Amino acid sequence: MKTICNNVRVLTAPNPGPMTFSGTNTYIIGSKSDLCILDPGPNIEQHYEALKELLKKEKGSHILVSHSHMDHSSMAKRLSKEFAIPIYAHGNILKSRSEYIKKILQSSKELGGLEGIDQNFSPDIYLSGGEKLTGRDWNLEVIYTPGHLSDHLSFSLEKEGVLFSGDIVMGWTSTLISPPDGDVGQYYLSLEKLLKRSEDLYFPGHGDKIENARKYVNNLKKHRLKREIQILELLREKKASSIELAKFLYKGLSDLVVIAGTRNVLAHLINLRERNLVSCDQAISPNTIFTIIDNT
Image (cartoon, rainbow, N blue to C red; front, side, top):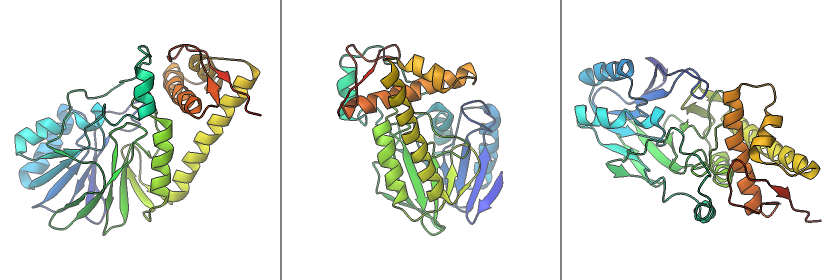
């Protein structure tokens, strides 16, 4: 555990991997009598023991969960039960899907997704964005930032001027957007929301702190828009599925990266279809063939 700024410490869970980088960052906000545990992380014994030792010495008042992927949320219930600390989160992953995604799911039974989602997770206190959470020496603003997951929240530590970005903005790569709970349209809106804010130092769910964060977020947006253009250019040459497109776009990378890339490409295709830029003649799945729409 190390101190990373005034009133904030970080403990990185021992769950490194291709999708988690060096592990999930658990942030400890506040002083000894009023701790906020932000993203308690995966239910791994070594990580639990470290948090248990901390909470034996310092009193916890809040457990916050940025989103219900298991590497962020699955420790929450255990800590809450052991130390009688309430859990705060959005938690409404099914209700928060966009209306367009809900419409697609009425006919698309093979869309896939749900990778790593903690389907048994529910908070004690539901958040929707805009709430103010306070401790003895800290104040957090809750910001609804779907896109990576439809129940995703970010948190602004107001006095320190920093933002905890969860997985909507990560410190080592762009985020996975896997339909139906990942949504490119929501992701773009969340990036725009963050760009309008003043925080320029982010503490992400994975990876190191992000300085010059607004420039970093703007570059993430440019990256996604570039990927969108690449997809459209490939479809101008011939119709294709997300699987076929990903094999080309992520050529030479590991199989796991290509699988994740396929989910990202499918998310882009769904968004492009919503915007009437591509079409398909069958229920949407990774194998669905998409065709570009000539709007000239």
